[in-house]
Amino acid sequence: MKALFTLGLLAALGATARAEHFNIELVAAADGARQTSYADQSPPAMGVNPRPVLQARAGQPITVQFIMTNGYPHGTIRQAGVRYYVVREAALAQRTLPALDGSVVTQGAFDLDLKPKGRIGARMRIVIPRPGIYLLRVESLRTQNTHEHFSAIDLQVR
Image 1 (cartoon, rainbow, N blue to C red):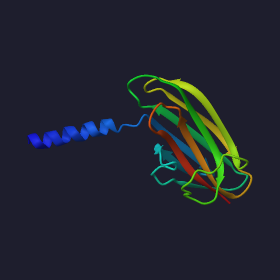
Image 2 (cartoon, rainbow, N blue to C red):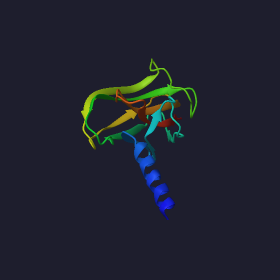
Image 3 (cartoon, rainbow, N blue to C red):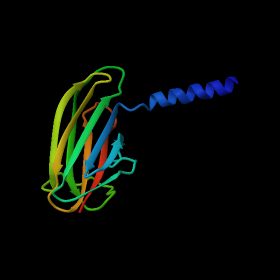
Image 4 (cartoon, one colour):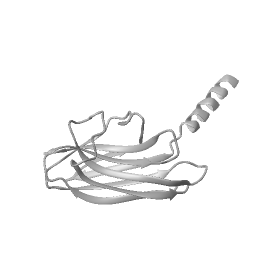
């Protein structure tokens, strides 16, 4: 019984040590379809979780919403950043980040000090005029950690 308790205690401590600093919920919806993605981390650049795919039509409004929550319980994360963007990519589930160049459909960023359990988010409508495969991504920046957090959805626009 004592060994079982010790194993349970070690498992609980391990879960605490792995707790993520940011929880991110990203939702994209178009024409009644909806996909949700949750936090992943980099490195690697594209994370480890498979990305959901939202089907949409060119010229159709896509509603995007994200909420980022600071799960770090030991203080305010100062001068952190949040960046979001939609960029054309070569294929679904592409394993490299596309360049943020002329193929960016929309993007934005802001800086903040985020208190423990503090939340920040945005809701917007985007329109992608041309068919193709696009990456929708929200990511943390400058969190003074060994890794950053992000959430992503592939958009297949026909």
